[in-house]
Length: 92
Length: 375
Image (tube, rainbow over the protein chains, first blue to last red):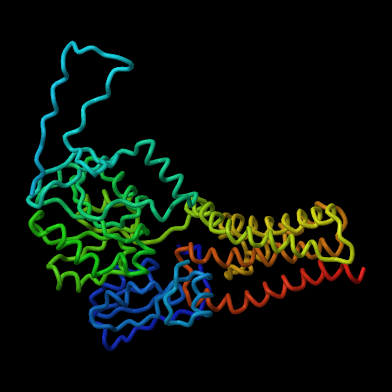
């Protein structure tokens, strides 16, 4: 996947290292190899590789990771613009 | 409760026969009101009743199903019943592989299991593939727990382990599954074709099994569905083109037809440039934003049909602008089918792309329709 890079500096992904227990779940589930375990803590090694799928945050046992997950699909986003963020979106 | 088994009636010998000979007798697995699935070989007896054992080889109807789903024909209804299935002679020690009830997902796993004894636990993802369903949480923690308990998995297998496709991780919190039903989630490979190696290597995923790919072939198979989704909106757009073609100081049927054909060709060029050329040539097109990639291919496609008419007049220029706008939008829509576009990135490029696409369209209408009045 290294040959495909998307827009840099946009992801909402954040890791609070102070909370991290170094279990490695994030590194295991991330399909873009955004995380690595350095000594006893997770570290973000490729922030712009993140596609905000939310797998890491959902599987972090101590909620050290936050990301605003969503669907990277234009027609879905247009519907959220029209109906508002909290609305029930049909599908895309 | 095991279902009662019937022995088929022996064929009556020497009975008079008319017309073509009768077909084979009913299978002992047939039940009133149910239809046997073609991918089921037979049924295995388990402590929780009969479980269908799947064939691991594709039949013609499976391939036809793949073709139909990839063309977008009744894709939302291409599904299998959720629940437990067996591959080979699955037993108490056999691994449990979890998948979605989109038949394309189920089949991708099933055909990799020749010679493997395993259970397949199918979640009700409403006929959606693993990754998209994980995003919608139908391939999710709650559904997994419900399904594990519902099929009585704890009484069928002696171990307490579930192997999930890695892309299901955005819907399933492994630790919550263990808390709720005692089964530990093991993250398997992304692709079903790596499952056999994963099992053989003691459930260790190699780095390449955890990494996404988006090869030329993987991109090409997505194109027909992208196009099928455009059929309905395209009909409305052709109506709009006809309406705009009818405007002008003088009306003639010949002109209406000529204008409609010209602008429809520009529209089709835009669709082909954005929904076919962009996916196919994705890594070789410049810029990271899809609206720019589509704008570029649309410029080429629009120029091709405009210059094909002969002189580059106001209509020709309008055709290029339409080609660019349509292609740019279609390409932007393809972000949803890629495995690497983040929603924040898509929203950012939409805020830039949509105003440009609308401006391009508006300029095209002014040139094309307005030109008839001030000529």
